[in-house]
Length: 343
Ligand code: ADP
Image (cartoon, rainbow, N blue to C red):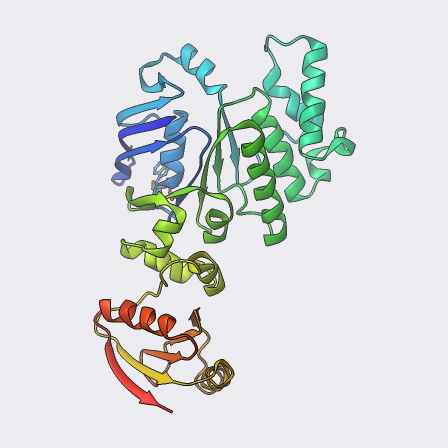
């Protein structure tokens, strides 16, 4: 288990003190994949670097696998750090060394015999599916392959925890998916705890069990991802959902749960009731075309268009009554002004 207790980190710069992390308390259970999301500058990287004490917190205590890292001397800390792997956005491979040598590097000084080390490296190469690239140099690899090598290197000492700092941010969506799949399968096989920082909703949604949302150095909300994203409490979470995800991601996430819409109090709502899905779909595309609206939120057979000149929100209802009732109840909770137009 990882426990961060009242962690604060202040950087004293020439111009001012930067309070990068402010009084964060967080528990991450063994074997969890835990996401930390937030916009750039929220303090995510600094917080995660406090877990392995790459940054020493200004205040607070850090516990990993039962050891209080904040109370250790440098030598003891070096030992504990071996149980915490880390990967980065730009891979940080050694360019003058081959894939094999990069993965072998952390095993220097390990208690394993030469043969055992070789065996270990070969099994890691197999895990990342890059056996045939073992003699290649990083410059001869794609971004995804480089990150695979970085993952293997981070796992060389069999760590209990893997920290991933924007590990997929430099990769295209397809490669991102394959790296996430690899991380998930490693988590399932070994039970390793993964802490994953990202500003991308899709990354969190794809593999995380839990998520903490950061803003201005603080964790503003946390919990199981479905809970956090289907009932976001903090405004920043709602903004995050609205600005960083495609609507279909939100929809997939909340399909079985209450709908999420970033609705402001006092907005004017126009409801159009139609009987059939196809009529409402046709109307939606017409409204979208004429008014250049591109945001549709769909739940059940209810579609909501935000930003249309017809109203701040246009809701087109069709289909099952319970969907409609659920939608109305949800919208009314936000005291949205309602105008009803019937077919
Ligand atoms: P995020 O990972 O969410 O983008 P960071 O943890 O990198 O956020 O940064 C949080 C804040 O701390 C930012 O204002 C950043 O400029 C500042 N910061 C981070 N590292 C340092 C440093 N070494 N010196 C001074 N300020 C820093």
